[in-house]
Length: 85
Image (tube, rainbow, N blue to C red; front, side, top):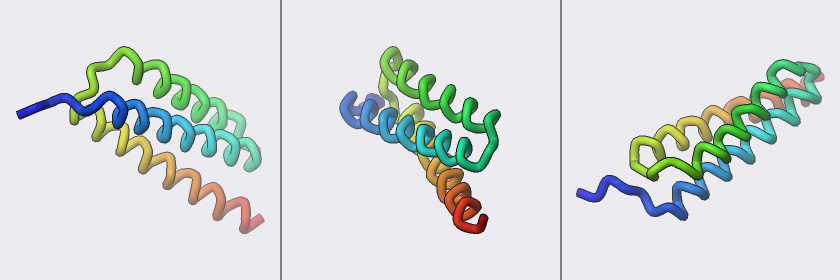
């Protein structure tokens, strides 16, 4: 069984997850939470730079999908809080 993910798919997941965390950072900044905004920015940068040196396996791709799901959840929650203000 092939344990490697196509590199294009892996990089696309890393970039989409990074963009989602950038969106979380902007939303958290608008909510006034500097700590969470900086934390989301650090996670976005780590996702970009660690995606380059890794061998794209299915387990790391699943971790990227989990981080993407978490970023989407945080951004939707933050948007709901912004609309409720």
